[in-house]
Image 1 (spheres, rainbow, N blue to C red):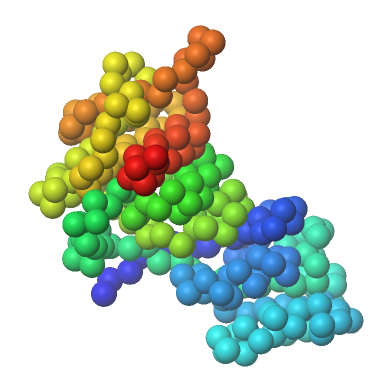
Image 2: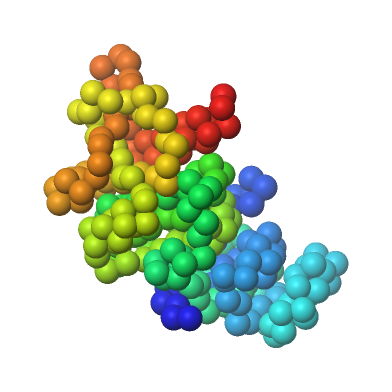
Length: 269
């Protein structure tokens, strides 16, 4: 099995309304709950954990247990050394050094997916805003999407902002990274997928579709939208009905609305 590793730079989760700040260093997360989440997530590699000298063991007891199970070393260092790793932030005395997260391969995902369940995926056409990317991952996980497909180029990486905005859901569903979005759409069509492009100018709305087949929802970039050739490959276009002369919504909101419309229809609501 071939995996492409994406460096987890600044990976931070926003768990249980805990407010965290991004580190300026590229390979660390900090805070008790984010470190626990990283240790619990098999798709996130933790190489080492640093604990501030004098921190009560009871404050990070769960982390100690998880680190022992995962064979991750814990090193005690002075507080100023933690600041050297992540800056002067609210680290709660806990910093974890990360290794990487694996992207899924499209061909392998196809082989292991049951298409009779009519899975739906989200295809991102060059979403470069990390907040939008993270929010889309969170909505995709919540709505039951089978995967999120992204291009290798002109696409936001899985970094701290993405992890923070996704609230720990990045990695809970496959993130498939491909060299060519259009070729990937063609391949998925061969397996029975239909593709819909989100387009504000379409007369057909997200309320009009039945979503009763394997479905790919294509979401365009914040500035230029969906690339022309990609839009031409889609079987139809869908718009989001809006009032008060609002012309458009940002990518993450648009994606969330159509994903939960799919879920609503499939639940028969």
